Length: 400
Ligand SMILES: Cc1cc2nc3c(=O)[nH]c(=O)nc-3n(C[C@H](O)[C@H](O)[C@H](O)COP(=O)(O)O)c2cc1C
Image 1 (cartoon, helix red, strand yellow):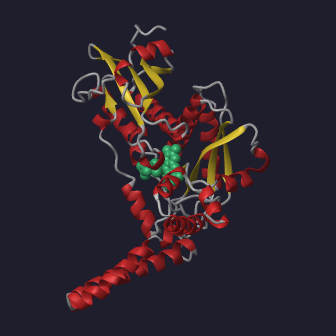
Image 2 (cartoon, protein in one colour):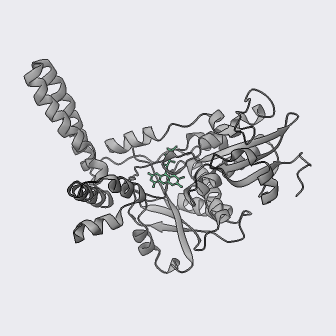
Image 3 (cartoon, protein in one colour):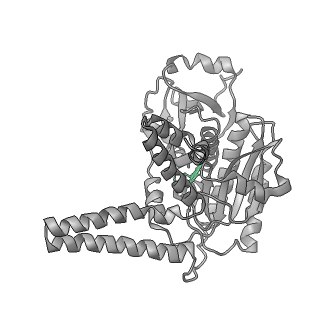
C-alpha cells in the first residue's frame, strides 16, 4: 500500500475495512480503497447525497444504447425518457437543495391536537431542512423542553448534557440542518448514562414533533471534529464523550432523490410480535389476550421508536402472572456499546409516555444481577443484554 492508500484505509469504518480486507488481490484492493476514498470525500463535503444516482444514470445510458441496437426505437425512447427524468431530478436537487435556489416554504403546522402516542408514531427522521432558523418562540419552547426533561430523574448518577449548536456541522446524509442538540455523556463508559441520553432526547424529540418541528437523530453520520470545533470550551475531551446529535428545524419539501428513497426504506418496522416476548425463550406474546392487549398502543409506540440505521436492536420481555403484567425487561440484541443503549433508552421513553397516556402506573428499576440471571438461563445462544425493567405498580412480589 502506498502512503495515500494507507491514509484512506486508516480512516475507514469497521464495515468498509471488513469488506476491504476480504479482497485478496493487492491491486484490486488499492483501487477499491481509492474508490472508497472518493466516496468519503464526497460524503463529508456534502455532495454524495446528490451524486449517488449518477452510476444509475450511466447504467441506464448504456442500456439505452443497447436498447437502440437490440430492440428498436420504442425501447430506446423508453430508456431515454427514464434517464432524462433522473438526470433532470439530480440537476434540480443540486439547484434547489445544495445551492438553495428555491421558493420560500411556509412554516409547518403545530400538532397540538395529537396525543403523545400518535406523535411517537408519526415522528420520522427529517433529513432535509428549510433554510430558516427556529423562530424565537420555537427556540424558547424547545429549550424549556430540554430543561424540563434534563431535570427528570435519571437511571444513572452520572449526569448527561445537551448542548445546543446553531451552525451547519457535517452530518450524513441529512441536508441543510443548521441547528442541533449534542448529547454528551461522561467520557468513562456508563451504560445507564447512555440509556439516559436516549430517554431524555426522545422526550424532547416528541415535544419538538408536537411543535411541528422536524428532527433527526444522528450518530454514525456525524463528524465529531466539526461538532467539537463548534462546541469550543463547552467540550472537554478529557471528561466528555459525544454520543450523538439531533438535528432540529423546519422540514423542507425539497428532498434529494437519494434521501427520499433512504427515508422510505428506513421507515419499515418489525412487527410487534417480533419485538415483544412473553419469556426468555422468546415465545411470542398472545397480543389478543390480557395483560398484553391493554398495552397494545404502548407496544406500537415502542415499535415506531427510532434506532441507528433502523437496526431495531431492543426487545421487550413481558413477564406476566394471572393476566397481570409483573414487569417488562428491556434488552438489547447487539453488543453495540452506544447505539443499542441509546435505542433502549428511547424505548423506555416511549414506554413511559405511552403508559402515562393510558393511565398505567409503574416505575423503572434495574434488577440486580442474580434476579436477572435466574431468568436468563434459556438465552445462551442469543445475544441479550439486559438494560432495564419497568415494574408494574400493582405487582408486589418483586422485592430484591
Ligand atoms: C442513535 C441513533 C443514531 C442514528 N444515526 C443516524 C445517522 O447517523 N444518520 C441518519 O441519517 N439517521 C440516523 N438515525 C436515524 C435512523 O436512521 C432512523 O431513526 C431509522 O432509520 C428509522 O427511521 P425513522 O426515524 O424515519 O422512523 C439514527 C437514529 C438513532 C436512534
